[in-house]
Length: 240
Image (cartoon, rainbow, N blue to C red; front, side):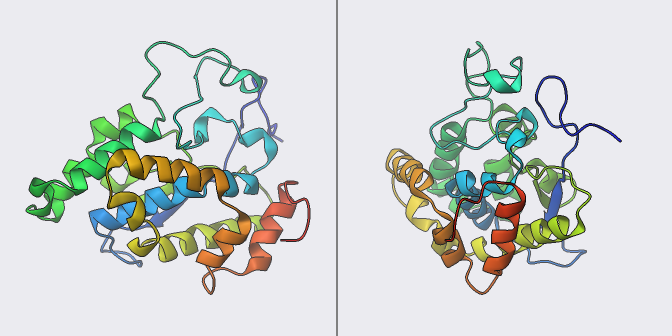
């Protein structure tokens, strides 16, 4: 059997889950560009919570880099157990939430965006070159598949032969999209200046809890399913 962890501490395999948000040919709600931004912001907010669903060796894995609201902590040349120890010139914007958040807010508030159609808004917000330069493929939530498949890709879950884990994780990803496509959850971050919005998002990420996530997703995901993922990852330390 293939090993779980490579010699450099990174995952040998992972469970990458795609959820439809923009493909009209398959099932799922077609999200507007603004809804996609809201979904991404919601994931950033709960990044430190959902990361606890993974096995510990994935928490600093460079193929599913955490979207830290305070900025990148990942350098590709480092082994996993030294991540964040020595920044490398030229990597400052890679996996960088503040840079992409600033772009999203300033674009959403521009007159040009509000006067544009759906296709133009998508290009303004999510052009491939920008995503590749900031929060691209190797992040825990990958937006690039929107352009090819109409999906977003959740990349963090460690590979598993346990079908219950696979089902619980897939259900969680779909439910997360269904809940947080409603921009009411994230409008407070996007309706003010990007500086103030980013500061609030950083605070929200640092103070996010499993309880807050379950409250926001009430009726969409069973608490027992989330507790099961936490227990499987060995990150669960008590009742919530």
